[in-house]
Length: 63
Image (cartoon, rainbow, N blue to C red):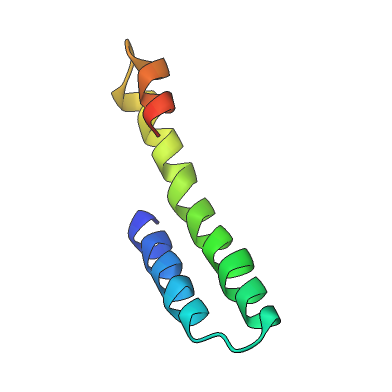
């Protein structure tokens, strides 16, 4: 999921660089990049709970 989300975010940024109208930016950066970020973020939150027991607050703050 992390690699897929990274790919969606990258494609959204590339697509937004070719935008010629405002709605293209809204779709590319607003929807696609946000969706890709959600795909990346939730597995990372799940991994933090398992990996960082003692310094969980520091790990969440860094993320």
